[in-house]
Image: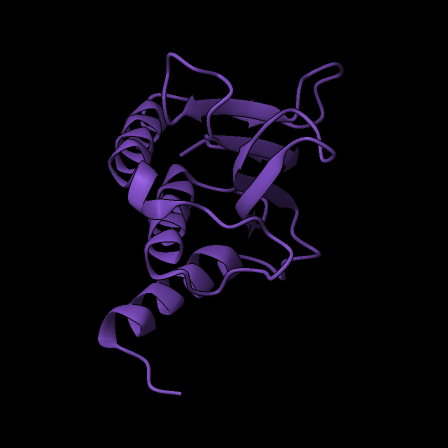
Length: 152
């Protein structure tokens, strides 16, 4: 397989963002970033997701921002995508996806901390729609699964 320099870089970013911190299944702190649309597995579409783990200090804003970049690269290159995920129309959504990533990344700089142990707290702690005027369109969700995250 011949990989372009861009594909190698995107893969390195994706691996670094996803595997930073503790082992992906044993992290003290766990968050997940998703690109999806719809409200359920039966009628929704899942285009991409990445899990971020960390130790006691928690998943950082920088880790999430790196993972946002890895998501964009994966969508652009159609690389490292799970065969069970739905196909994302990158050419249709490229500028909206980039703007949603920039908006979410900026919001992250002043957001947090979030604590997964708070009773009744929704796992989804941040959502950014690619088209903010149409909630039926794709969106990026940031979920807090375990620990206190986004402290730094």
